[in-house]
Image (cartoon, rainbow, N blue to C red; front, side, top):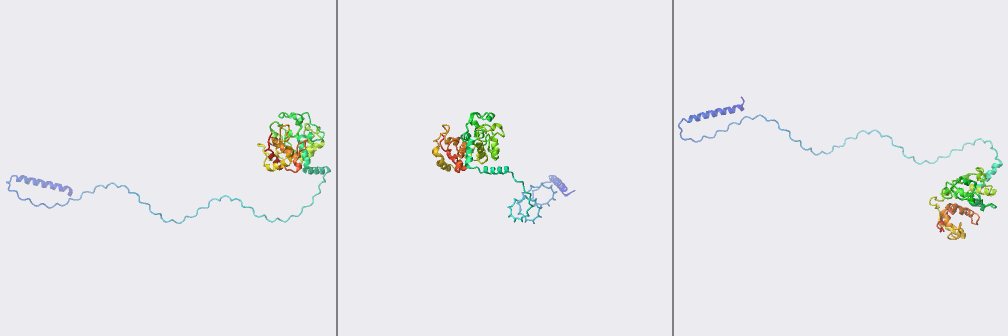
Length: 352
């Protein structure tokens, strides 16, 4: 029996004994009550009870503040080399090295065949064509305009050119159908130029690309070698045909698209101030200071032609007006730029 279970049992025994004594005392004559006895000494402490079960764990505390960074470790090993980058731009060329020594001359070749007299004449003729005189070009330019007013003895045709039936857009008749400018345009490019549309359109090609041919080839073309219907020898003299061909092959034609804006009809890069000086020194003598003294077809004046048909204006300033004493700019030493400057100024004059 453990000490913990024996203690209550002893207390119960004591209680029974005390009860019995009390019962017995009831049978004894009671005397006077005596004084209370002294308090008894405190009993010894009971034995320690068994250890209770362990309590639940408390909640985890908050994390402490981060400590300072540790010292930097030693560098790691170098990584592998990356791929090669693209090549840089090429630097400027170095100075040219010294020329090597000239090699020995080769053996002399056999002499070539002597050129024929005809070949020599052709070469001389071609060189003359390249340097055709200003007067020859001016006359050829007027023939291109209205040849029967330039070719002595010629008369204006009254019937249509045989080629005219190949087109239906242009309704002009008679002499107009024989004028070079009517088919090939004032800018010499025909259907590909200013006359590609409008009342003057015919659909015929220009002559600008034929300027590389020789005068003889062009004369033959004018005589109908390429097309019998294009035979002008029946209405023009042989001399006039040669002069017209010289105008084409000898430098009379220019690329007018580099001088005139085909959309606005304005000259490109002209100097109207310089053009006014040239106009006043030559043109105003007949046309007047405002260009209105002479009228063309009874109505048009200088300002009209300059604004409505700058290609025609440029041609006439360079080569003159057929059948009139109008001087040709090319014979006065005027360049294409000079004529263009006159055009630029003339477009500022009244149109009527």
